[in-house]
Image 1 (cartoon, one colour):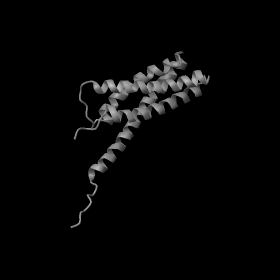
Image 2 (tube, one colour):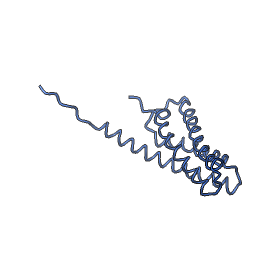
Image 3 (cartoon, rainbow, N blue to C red):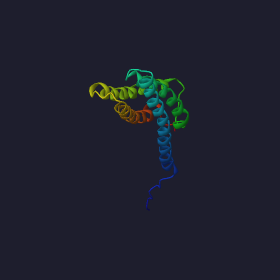
Image 4 (cartoon, rainbow, N blue to C red):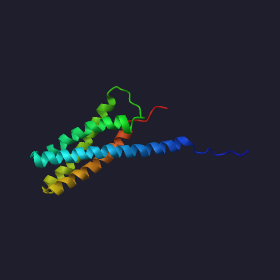
Length: 150
């Protein structure tokens, strides 16, 4: 008697498709968050005269609020939520780490490198956002929006 090897079926394809959909919608939510963060940071910094770091923190908090709602109800809607508030606390805690990454990049650009121009400021923002976004996507999948129970 010969044994046949099981053929991969729809669940593997579904998870691949789900991953791509998650990645795309996460990217769109991230794009909106980026617009809020960079637009808000430049508005605060250049038009309202805010400090370089405060001008990153305030719009990042606004971006975080919109990102949570969009990620929970769109990107990761198919994943479990226990409704206990644990998800919200972890989400905002991990976003605090992401914001720290962004602020660190801005601080290095502005204070350590002494680059105070608008182009350098925005370059620091973009690098910080890119690094923080990679961390956020990985951490959301791992600890916040966990897979639905089987």
